[in-house]
Every structure is written in structure tokens, then in C-alpha cells.
Image: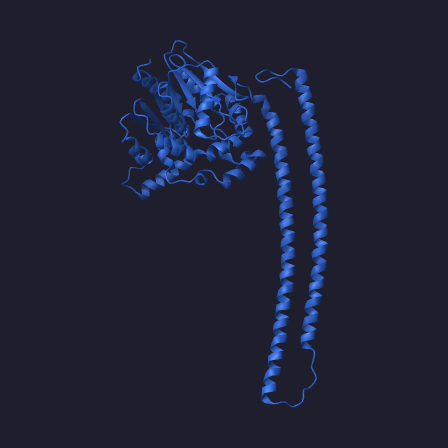
Length: 450
């Protein structure tokens, strides 16, 4: 097999192709055997249910016949004896009724058993077919999985990083991707292109994301930051840093600034999440059993059935090759075990950072993409319809301003924070790289590091 980061030779490609073909043949053979076995089980259960149903019918007829048989005419009896005889007749009828109920219940249980077996068989077959299809697609998409950066070893695993920009820059912008994000090494390229003339930057795919190896370990905020710090140091980056967190990576950035204040000279957040957003939540509220099921389904390719998983290019800023790579990365690891572990620890991580306190000695700018602002709103027909309906229902309300009302109220209480809103999706970096770069360069100047 080819070494990490190196293009495989023709001979290696042929060997890999033979292995893939052999694996596919083995899977197809196993599927055929499973189908044949399933049909046999199905027929056996049918025969069993049919036999027991006939037996049940015979039991019902026997009970009914016994109930209807004429009894010998009794001798004259007293009124009390006659009353007692009537009670015995009722008992016989009641016994016959419950016999029918029991028999009917048995038949129902057997048909339920048949239905469940049939359902399991169908779902198993569907899962196997989807897994085969997913493996085939991943094999086709492997040609697009070309690393744009390099790798460093951290804790025995290889992490992928991308760096570049002005070599004489006084500060390095450290980009931190949000949870369940796997394609930022490509998605952020248009933004980096706008920054490279004035700023130095570095980005790391965390374990289990993008081109990085999986760790399979706990993913609390402390381990995430330590892993990233180690990776960028090994890659040659040096403080001071301006942290650029996206989404939930805001928890990482705040922890980093609290823990190593000498390294961090500022935070420029992109739709950044802050710890107080998790107040009142339990870990299972943010990541629970449903997420675990989702992770298992995504392993066999379920992500391909959800249109919302496919990367988008609303502003037309990506090349075809970039979009192919983004898609391949998403379908390769849309929701990995490391992502799941990170989400599972998110609420506790947020609580820890909130207890550590808000960093007050550095400037912070948070830039949000507002999807109900024009011109982006016109690109999203579904969102536009919802906004138009809301405006009609609440004509006196400022719908646009209300989208980030809670965030605005929170940041107004922070003296060192500036909040900026621009038109765009929540994941704003894929839509407005020029506007973001302009704001970011101004922020670097504000930090006195231009």
C-alpha cells in the first residue's frame, strides 16, 4: 500500500483494485447466501404458523362442540338446586370464551413473529445493499481524496494540517473547525486565498475528521485543544495566535485563551458558539442514543440518502475539483466515532469553560452569517417562503434583526466583544470569503499585529 501523503504507483493501484474486486465478490456471495437462508426461514415459519393455526381451529371446534352437547334431564330439584345448575352453564360458556381468546392470541403472536422476522430480513438485505453501494461509491471517490496539506504525528496518530500565507506576518491565524465538520481543509481555501497576502494561517483536521486518523479516545475540550496545540507546534507555527473558531469550536477557543493567555492575542469567531448556550442542558440532550444510531447508519452510507449532507456552493466560489473533494470527505466520514465522542462531551466542556470565566484581556470579534438577510435570502427559496410568512403574520416585528437576538443580547454585556452580521448561511465562510477577509484584516490591525 502507498505511504501516507504519497501518490500510489500503478502497481499498487492494480493490487488495490484486485483486493477491492475480491472483497466485492465475497460480499456478493455472502449476500446471496443470506437471501437464500432468509427464504428458507420464511418458509419454515409459514409452515409452522399454518400448522399451529389448524391445531388452534380444531381446539376451538372441540370446545364449542363440548359446550353445545345436551346433558341428561335432571331430576326435579328444589329452586336452590335449579339456580346452582344455571350457574354451571354460565361457567361453561365463560370457559369457552376464554379458550377462544387464548387461541386467537396464540395465532396473533405467531403472525407477529412472522412479520418481525420478515421485517428484520428486509432491513438486513437493505442494509447490505446500501453498504455495497456505499463501498462502491467510496472506491470511485477515492481519486478525489488528495490532501492539500501535510501530516504530523500526535499521540501515535497522523493529523492533517494546511498552512500558508505571508511569511513575515506578526501573528498566525489558527482556524478551528466546528463539530461534525470534515471538509474545511477545502471549504476554507477561498478565504485563505483572500488572506494570504497579509496574514499567516494554519488549520488542523482534528482526529476522526477530514484526512486525519481516528483516535477512538475521549474528546473533551482539554484533549481537543492539547491535540491541536501539539499539531501546530510540530508543524512549525509559533505564537502569538489569533484563534478563528467556527461554530462549537468557540468552546475550544475560549478554553485556549483562558489556559494559555500569553499565546492568544485575539479571537475572531465565525458563527461562534459560546458556553452559556448549553445552560440547562444535560450531555444526553445534545448527543444521545439517536446520535449513536445515526453514527451506525452513516457507517453503511446512510448519509448519501440525505440531500442536506451534500456540500453546497451557494456563491459559486469553488472549482469542480474542490466540490468533488468536499463531497468525498463528507461521505467518507460524515459522523465518525471521534465526532460522536466530541459531541457527547460538549455540554460538560461548555460548563467547564463557563466556570473558567470569559477572557477579558483580549479583543474578540464574532461574525455571524444571517440567512434571512438579502442577497443570500433570495438564494434559499425555502427560507424566503418562511420569512415571507413570518412577516405577514407579524407585520410589526423586525424578523431580520430577531434572528440573532439572543446572541446580540449576550455580547452586549461583554465590553471586549464586537458582533458583526453579514448576509449568508450560518456556515458563512463558504459564501462570503471576501467580506470575512476584510473584517479579519481589520481585526488583526486592531490587535496591533498587522
